[in-house]
Length: 303
Length: 274
Image 1: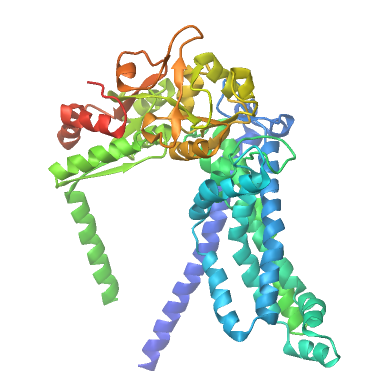
Image 2 (image 1 turned 30 degrees about the horizontal axis):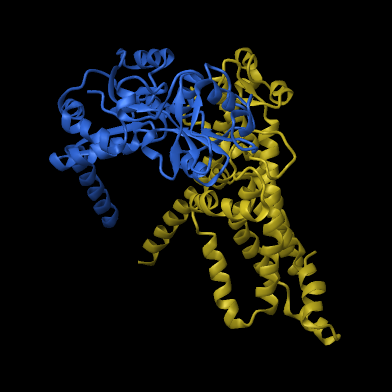
């Protein structure tokens, strides 16, 4: 009997290991596939006549369906940066603030429902948030600020911040809660009040975790597609104003990949954009992971 | 182990049931997706043994699906390009079958508060190419024009680019939205907006009367005007098939072109071909 269960355990262990490995393998394969489809930009002379690294940055115009196709990436990169900037501008204070309140000041009862409610926000499908931004938020903001273009980077950024806040909130809250009680007690014992303790002791103690939460939020904001596609108007303009319509890298892939001819320079370019996005989010998430690791070791007293 | 085999058995049964029923897939133009759905609903009511699945995505998406063998019928709001026909031929050794199933006027929407109600083809071209940027230049209020359009995967985008802009590029400031409904919604909320799409979606906005040139009268995209070829921007809506329809698909095509099928075209807001 015992022998048999041992064997079964081995099988299960192996199965789990296999599943874990296949996850890693599939991520690797996806990345390889995306790179492979972007490769002609570097190798094929025929593709380079229309789309090459030099061409991507020598024009400010994104006009892939044209008698004279131009693949200027500058407006798209700027669009992603603008929307991400606005999203973080709102999500960081709100997310970190809410986390600080929940972990340091909220009564236990409030804490018990605050956290789940913010986490439900993370479960809202992004297409719903995008639709809300397209129909309701855009008009609200336009009436409040009176700018000309109803759909713009600002509108998309605010909508995006709703998707980023739960990420920042949850991880920040976990980081704050992980700060040892002894630190707080020491601070209070020295005569600091609760606010001083939260601001000067707990918050710096959770610094690495909060930074990690911001980085993960940043990763989410860069890659998020549906909200930006619906709320930003998608005009590929190269302007500094946050109140102009804007087109992001991710929304461009979502909008155009459906129609594109396989093997066309336009197709390769979209995959190049995919590689760009993948690389950006990969490093941002890697950075966040390293921060969390550091925090864990620090709190365990190993650093 | 027993559980797994039960699940496998159930899956197998499910698969065999779904292949036994007659299934037709229709995919393509977002402009035509509502029309396709109404047709499917009515047809399935009369033929309960047939399942018809209608999805959108854009004309280009539908044509790609037809070429890849992923759909039985492709809905398209533009004629197939030569390059696409070549691809179909390469794959299936057929040139495809083109069936005009309805007519549509590409409608230009203006916000209800806009004092203008008619535009010439040239004026529309100037707006979308960015030559004209203020409504004042067209006799309206002193306000910046906010042009809305569709993504470049849309058949309507290609139609407007080819027929109104005469192949010129849209101005970079043209905001592109996913779906005609989103365009109508944006224009209905934007006093200075202008957008385009099928007539079926126009709610909360007004239809622009279109004039061929400054001297000719303006026409609204009504059934009579489209049928009489008076409305200057009308187009055929197509169904594309790999080869001449047989069996259930043929029955469906015949029904769509029958008076009963064409009556639904009118109901949805397009114009019958017959």
